[in-house]
Length: 391
Image (cartoon, rainbow, N blue to C red; front, top):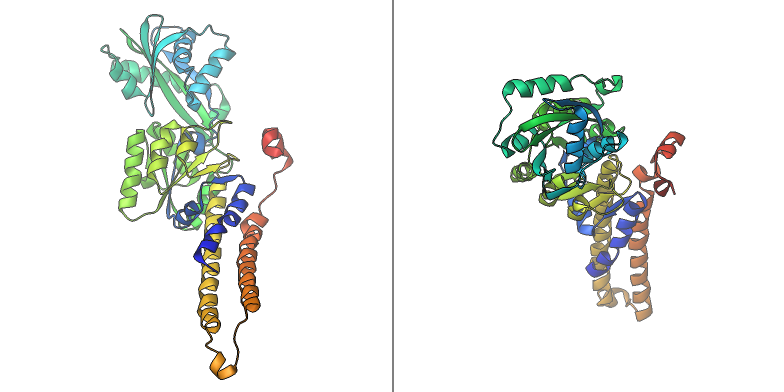
């Protein structure tokens, strides 16, 4: 069995992943994935469901609906889950969203656009604060935060909730309001982190969100406090991953949006959540795409990679052993003492049997335990999933 023949069987290793909703871009990805010892997780859309809702709005001088109207105008063309939550809330309130011009998006920070003749910025506190010459006082910012603390929904106080805050600023006025957005932790987030840690894989959470939100989610899923980092830019995330690699770690990054693209590209293996029906920057930069949009598929991918490498080593060992024995026999090593020489038909038959062994051993990968014992979705799961994912 030649090395080229072994390489041609890579499709046998990728098929089990495709059946489990894993888009794996090449056999080399499985090899790198099998050696992973650290996994970095984004928060919004990765550990959380990525379907946040607006829970409260606070304003320094205007009606709350005016703050929502301005924010929705700026965020209407953005693809981030927080932007989607703001625009959806404005639509539910039947607000007349104005048109914008000069749209500018800075991943990890916020969006800027001209609304009604003046620039309006929506994003994190420091970024919005620095966009304008007029500055809100510390007292005004503290007052905004206190107003956002009141959330009418009793569900929002759950430990499974992650609250983010988007600040709104306008030219000539500085920060004029803020919007609190809550997202729900994925059902499989804690169990996935537990399984990764049981496998001896260090888990990290890197997020551009504020510290309180990141700390709350990190504590809920069981990520160590020293492995939680907040208020990071996309470049800072990629820098932390490079630092981990410099310390000798093999790092995988799991993310879902354009903010995660630099980190996905910097990691040894980038894993993207498929949160949209179309390709996005995250899935373009990733080596593995979780088509089922389930965080638990990360464990499936790791399990598949380790099982695959075990099969590769078995097939390679067989090929080497076969050639060590067969080549001397074919050269006539047994002819002087045993009067035995291989005929062309016997040589061809043995070569065919070798190929059958390698192919059959590779096909056994589809019976690997973690895939054979995968839990079937229950009735409630099927109801909550789109028909395209059930079929």
